[in-house]
Length: 135
Image (cartoon, rainbow, N blue to C red; front, side, top):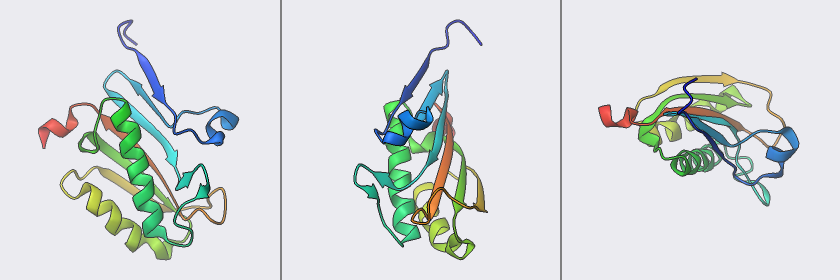
């Protein structure tokens, strides 16, 4: 790693970040890595029972984290989407498509056992600052 690269990170303020020892997102150089993000705020789960609503909340949360580190959704080059129930793939994919229609990052969607039954979706993202300039 170059001695000129700076590592910075942001928190979304959930208590899980300090308990589990992770940041919402980390930037090193021009690369931003966003941790697995759920539809959680200070009151708990947002959009209970609604995978599309959870996806929208998560992508807004990811957008905010990337923005705090100097990037934008246009810089996203990869997403990984985990769904509790594979039957929810289409509403989740449609919301993902609303946010990334013109960006078209590499994407993976997997059915997974998430940390709690109320969590229907979890999303990770990777962005490269300036990648959106090529669109």
